[in-house]
Image (cartoon, rainbow, N blue to C red; front, side, top):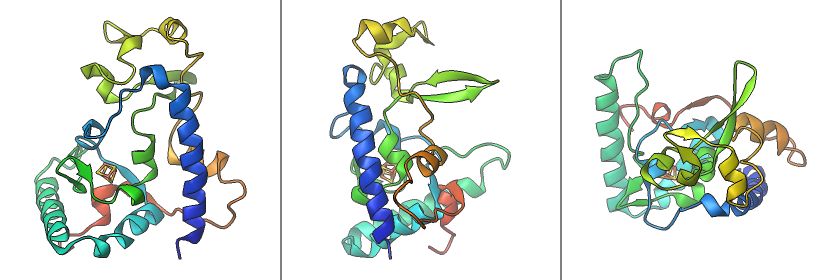
Length: 197
Ligand code: SF4
């Protein structure tokens, strides 16, 4: 059922490997660092959420129980959260500083740690991962909290990644050769679960 998507993931992973390599002077990711999974909404398309959860029954029973508990707690907290504010939280699939479904993680998870561009009022603005503020990825290009573009060159990197890292980009730019794949609606990860999950 997920054959096409797995083919697509191969393309994505190959592409992102090159991105990480091109930015290597700024990348401080290492095993055990889970900063990217500590606070966010984690946008997942329907296809990504289904692929992630297809791996869930294969997990040991005690891990499944723990994850279900985390999801339930988060749904409870979300229901008490102000409706007009984003609900940012630790990902429920993070356990003992590890993603329990790492091989099945979403596209957003695969891009964690890279700088990217966003269009703001018609201009391309470089965005850095949150961990730049705690001395990790891209902290070298920060100057008083602002991005100093010259520092990319100073570190031997010609420029940050020249586009958005959103799923839309990947859908439209990297999908060639993988016909017929449907991602479906994109929602914050937690919204793919209901209180009974
Ligand atoms: S699915 Fe895994 S990699 Fe993605 S945010 Fe959750 S714990 Fe992190």
